[in-house]
Amino acid sequence: MSTEGLIVFFLVAVTLVGFALVFSSFIPPTSKNLFKAETYECGIETTGITWIQFNVGYYLFAILFLIFDVETVFLYPWATVMKELGIVAFVEILIFLIILGLGLLYAWKKQALKWE
Amino acid sequence: MNIISQVTDSAPKYIIYDFGILTSRIHEWLSSMMNTTWTSVVEMVLIGVVFLSFYALVGLILVYAERKVCAFIQCRLGPMRVGPWGIFQTIADFIKLLMKELLITRNADKFLFNVAPFIVIIASFLAIGTIPFAKGIQALDFNVGVLYLMSVSSLGVLGILLAGWASNNKYSLIGAMRSGAQIVSYELSVGLALMVVVIFAGSMQFSEIVQSQATGWWIWKGHIPVIIAFVIFMIASTAETNRGPFDLAEAESELTAGFHTEYSGIKFAFFFLAEYMNMFIIASIAATVFFGGWMPLHFGNFAAFNHAMDYIPPFVWFFSKTMFVIFLMMWFKWTFPRLRIDQLLTLEWKYLLPINLVNVVLAAFIVLMGWYLI
Image (cartoon, rainbow over all chains, first blue to last red; front, side, top):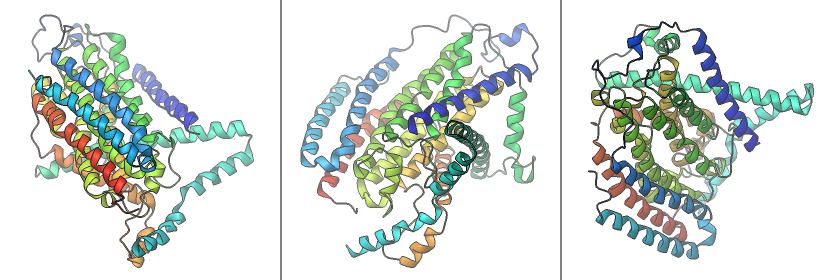
């Protein structure tokens, strides 16, 4: 049931979206006005372009996230069988987490966790 | 040992409220009238309609609840005009939002601008399928339920980033970038906090996690690691939903409305609804994983008390636990001042993540030693 259920859920969600699209193209009033389509910036005209290269700090955190997220996904299968495997699983994950902790420590010392 | 065996004796009493019986009755009734294909089609439509109306209803109730809680915390009355105690206020607001003109700014990337709110709403709708509301009421019962929930709920950030980028508005872009950094960072903590309970329960399936709490909720049974995990989960999930003290993605005093500055009408309503639904999802996951889901409250060998508790229907248990967690999150929001982005990232990477890693090891150690009630 689960996989079909997922498809059903997705279809229902898409139906909701489709309903909204159809509804919003009929019901709300529309009136063309040049100034309505301006970018909102508290009444001041916008200067310069917005699509620029953004602060690199966000990028660094995204990379760190990637490392630790893969590790979290890797830990989940271990977590499910931890009870059955016992001491072997515990020691192995301890080694894994220590290496990972060293990585975090390295990033910390390299000032990668500091927001500029 | 005696206590434990008595508890397990009284555990199966909640069978009287088994909703699996109801769903199988409906299934039999439908299949007596039509063939298999049509039965499954009708059932799917039924599931869709039920969940869709539930989704909308919960969204409306939560918006009303938030306004009332906020008002009482600030010594106000909150919405009072529409209906008794203003209970129809959110319906009126929703109708108003539906009637509003949809604006698209001239400079925006039109396709991405339109797609973004739909990604957010679809992601949050997919997530409510896995929540076990009561015994037998769970649409999607995956054996990798926790992982599925994590993956689906993290899809929402794509919509937020797209919304901010496509708006071509500086407030939106800053808001979206902050929100992206915040959500991806705190997702680690949410994942690791849930992992602690996965270690104890030995399963990622939500129905099994609930079943493993028949003799006591994990917050009691797993003592220290689970309590730490619960605290971290509450902090991290509040940040994940862009709420509370972590709402710097839509900090109205500096960024107008953050990533949804340029949205109007039903698209804004979708962002709004998705935010409240994410709060509901997070709260119901906390209730399921830490507070036993629809399991009634049982104390040691108080047989009479336990029997009395068994007669309260499971969905009442589930929703009261969920509402309790939601109230906690609202309380956070209206109590603490907003964090700065550097404080936010420091809190996650220098405090929560190391504590969490140590906590996972601690939980594994306690499971290894068997220092918890079964």
